[in-house]
Image 1 (cartoon, helix red, strand yellow):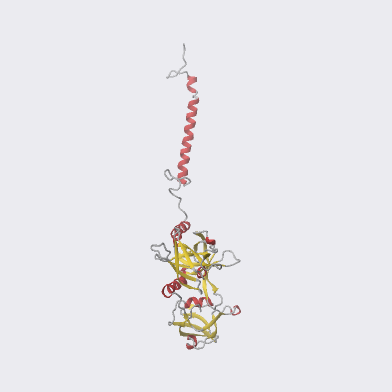
Image 2 (tube, helix red, strand yellow):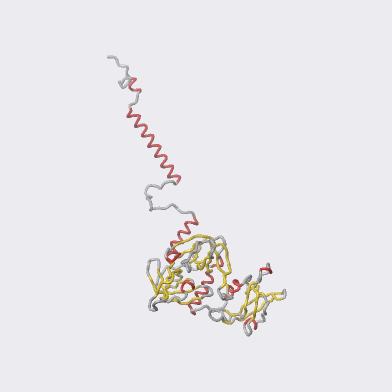
Length: 367
């Protein structure tokens, strides 16, 4: 029998035709090689995790600002509390009923808490609830209606607290976070925004007093009152106080430098000790723009201003080195002084500027 065979003894025609098994094995090897190359390409591009990084074990790093915000939130939330207020029932004076709820910021490890005065106004009992759901009856150390601030104290130690920053260093456009309990039950809610404006004038009802506020577009709702406005360093730069009714994205916070002065006085005295000049003031009319300053409408007889030679019609343009353009800036500046201290005023009179020194008296409470 003749064989037309090669060196291996197989017929040449059969040796030239690969079997189906060979074709399948070659195709499968190609697919596996391609998949392996794609896998390593995707790892290199960061589209998939490396082996061992199971879901939840390692998160992709956030961009710098988002990462800073998330880290700040983790530190701040444990120092934000719910402030629940109770009043006597109108039907049974022996019973207390819950009137409302706000927020508060723990500012010291030994239990001092700052909140808004309007949150606790008229309360017969104040209960503070921490993030770990412990409840404490709080003592009202002091309250100040003119700045809408109140200081509470609970009997607790080693509390997480938020450091107080410097509101004079705040810049328009800076990213901020508002933390609190909107609507009284959405606890530990964080909203994010920017500083929209500084030194917004807010007047106290039925008073000549006014103070400046920080404006933010971070969402602030009822229940957020008394909670902190924090920067990306995790510092309190303001205490959330109000939302402009009928407007979107306009929230107001009391600057932390005002908070520091008021909290210090309330802790030491139970009230704020304000200097008293013996004047009634008002903003200059807009018709006089660009001229700015605070007009002295009346000088009280026998007061400190009269003794210093100040007259009705004088316009205050500076307190010390601080330029004054409107009433809220004047009262902000006066919070840097105490009764009995010498206050340097610059006034305009008949087109001339005069430097006058006033030795301040003491304002009556809530005056």
